[in-house]
Image (cartoon, rainbow over all chains, first blue to last red; front, top):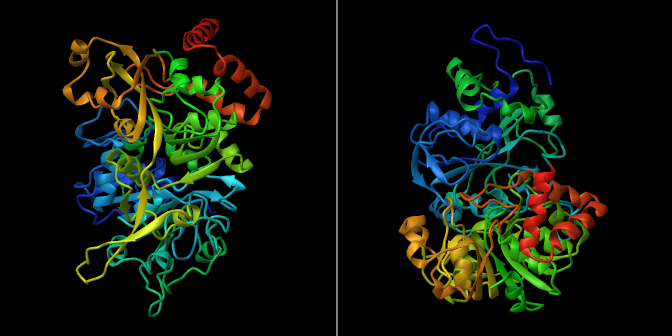
Amino acid sequence: MADLKPDANQPEEATIDEICAVAIAEAFRGDGEILCNPIGTTPIIGGRLARATFEPAMVMTDAVSVLAANPLPVGDDNAERLVEAWMPYRDMFDVVWSGRRHIVMGASQIDAHGNQNLAAIGDWRRPKAQLLGLRGAPGNLINHATTYWVPNHSTRSFVLSVDVVSGPGYDRVAPLSAAIRASHEIRRVVSNLAVMDFESSGSGDEPRRMRLRSVHPGVTVDEVVEATGFELAVPDEVPESRLPTGEELHLIREVLDPQGYRKAEFGG
Amino acid sequence: MTEDDVVARLSSGMTIGIGGWGSRRKPMSLVRAIARSELTDLTIVCYGGPEVGILSTLGKVRRAVYGFVSLDSIPLEPHFRQARQQGTIEVTELDEGAFYLGLLAAAHRVPFYPTRAGLGSDMMLMNPDLATVTSPYPDADGVHEDLVAIPAFQLDASLIHMNRADAAGNGQFLGPDLYFDDLFAKAATSTYLSCEKVIATGDLLAEGSLHTLKIPRLFVDGVVESPRGAHFTECPPDYGRDEAFQRVYAATAKDPEAWRAFVDRWLEAPSHAEYLERLDAEGEGA
């Protein structure tokens, strides 16, 4: 991928990790007072960034067992928490089932309809590679909004067919109950190359398919299409993913991740 | 009781619930007592941590029933991963929330609890015995919704580790999360509780608020005093996870010789007291 050039309109040069954090933050825009629950370093920075800027009503965990009202630096177990509620795991399931939650999860594989595999590569009976497992994905997907973060966009991660469905996509949910269809939403898929969504419906009764929403600076549409193992819907006009504002860069670099943990996912 | 007294009350083929969560407040001294026993053909039911890897690799486990298996700071338990890839254990893998309902159903003595979790995912394919039920109540459109019936976990015994308890079995957790230990206790025919320290009943409220007394003796059949009994998993506020030790354990998955040495030195230590002596000797040698 091309190096990012400094932009005259930006106070400082934004790097790809920061652009991805902002793309994840954007997924929460409009969510209001829900539990913002990003998993993983870049998603946590993105979620905390959204709350610190345009979604102040969201609640967030300290990644252990409380809801903390202040912006915590990622990876700092000793940061002082402004505790607003206790959130042990059992209560977390109540939040999941209430629908008032938007999670960001990883996906080792994802397909055109948004089916996610976190569980295993190969036959689940005796996998070639055991991955994290189903975890909470089956319950998450059918109860509340989900965004996926895939830091290694390639034909190995964006695949024609996933080996195991942990989190069901639009085709799997189409025949289920009205309550499930009303709660199921894959808001975005953010990768190191681009942002995708499912906002264009298929024709007629066709389930929704993944569509290219924006490409990160320095990435071409063709590069994204080539790195995707299924036919990605590509609109006529594909904008560039937005750059972080000066305030966002300050928050990412000085407040939310002063240690630069976010660089690790980008080979830094 | 001692750890070995607890194991004497268990038998091969049993279904055993294990409290804690991942690599957090696991009853490890009891797990090691099983590891050095003759018990085999066990079904273990847990939000899994190192107990799954240890007991699977030692050939004690026929089936693992879990919401996940993780060491937290090491996201995938490497011995469990190996057992899965070599096909040496049978598994019942459930959505994390669905797993909770299996405990809850057993605790409430009903055959199942319904949930939507699992519909549309491969959880149904991976567990062909899982059935669905149709709601007797119509939704707003008059439709009777299908739900997954998570069956009650029939636990012969549960093992949990608490920060404090009295001799009668009233258990107290002092950390940030009870996890599901109260449900493990209520779901099992017999529950054995290990704890950091046995104290007088009258001293329990000096240790923590009323809200920390979540395990009444009604649901406990035996108490083992086991200081550092959760080692190497965390047991806050008494101690954190021994990350260095956990890394050594994890690394043995790729090195049969190191695994043999780990089993000899740690898992086959003849008692918890001897385990602690070895641990302290290690610390002084470092």
